[in-house]
Length: 423
Length: 112
Image 1 (cartoon, rainbow over the protein chains, first blue to last red):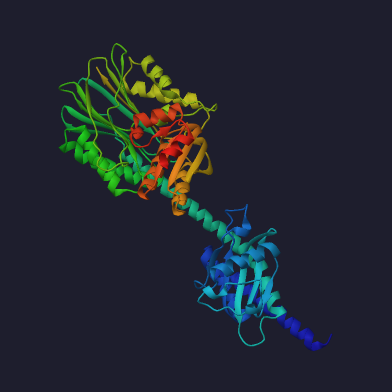
Image 2 (image 1 turned 120 degrees about the horizontal axis):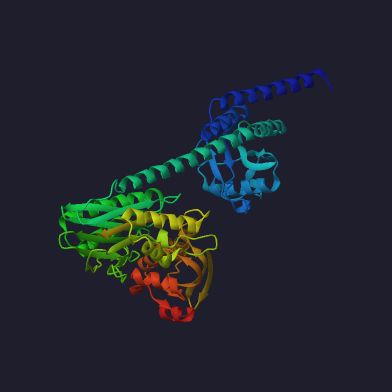
């Protein structure tokens, strides 16, 4: 070994170290995945004297079928790697997990479909990004400047950069995921706040009646909703509904529905007509996945009558003082399903000792660990047992019974109940 | 919930089993149907004989599927709905538009 080659080896080692130092210094300033990747690619482009570089990350959500996994590509400029070529390249890397050096790519039969990108690729050098022995992505540089093409020294340099960068990229990716998760959580919390704010803050006070309502959202917000709207001193509109979907879209639909009903309630004395308008609104203003069941009742304390229309909601119970049971089912189908639908309405008169129970399916469909439903019969039994108590006490009894029935099982849907007692 | 796909006389038969619950999997029934529509398959029978639990989310997925199929010129029929599902169809009055048949063969015949 002569002195010149010793010196050139030393020079190379110094260059490698300085590149790594540049990268380490640069990436220490940020956690952002996009920025980390851009910094690494920029350093590669500079030190390896190439036209362009990119980092492709494997989509880690599909662990069963990596070969067919679509890659997530992050690079300094868009469309550097044609889509099909990217898939071929990541497929090759998943299989071989070692550096790849091609100086004349048009004559390499492993890769085809290079023509669909705007950026012509002549030569490529790639190195796997691995952490703890697992492939997480590929670092690529394209089109070496000058005539000599990529050398083994370039390959060694890119491999070293890839080895040193992999963990940094992985950390940034994990941080990125964590941020995304946090954002989802925040959005859900925001949606829950909206929904909870739509619920009445207090129970209505009407002479001769005892009325109470309560709703308990599930962990992942469902779409239960109830409302009391006082239209004049003797009349009160009572709504209980269940909006399809969850999270923000459900919260938005619910607040829309509430605004509509609150507006309608003051101008329309007919429950059926109010339903028809709400139906039209939901049908026309939302996509095909949005529905709502809704029970809409108008209680008149002067005439002691209860006028209602039911849009596909679990039919409430009217328990007469002699324990005769009437289901309040007259109405129509769920809101938002069919355009221009006519809703029927009905009316019952209320006597002293009568009780109306309006509930959501989260109560009757609550499951215990044996996969049994709480069911209507249990609900009725709990209500009847405590019928002499106040409306609030009846509600507390039901919540308590559902809680002890499901025991340790997580609450899978919102539960809501409104009780009206004629005293 | 599991979805098994087969074909009978040019009609897609989806055999559903398990619980149609408030989870990502129930939403995927509508996604599944939308993919069928994208492939040009718009006549669908859902065999619901093996559904063990059916709530408002299942209903939402079913209605969304029905609407998407109707909008693309197709149709949906339901076969072998359990007593519980039939009672939900009754009180939601879905029964007026979404017919249930005792057998898959009858539902398929109704779509031909």
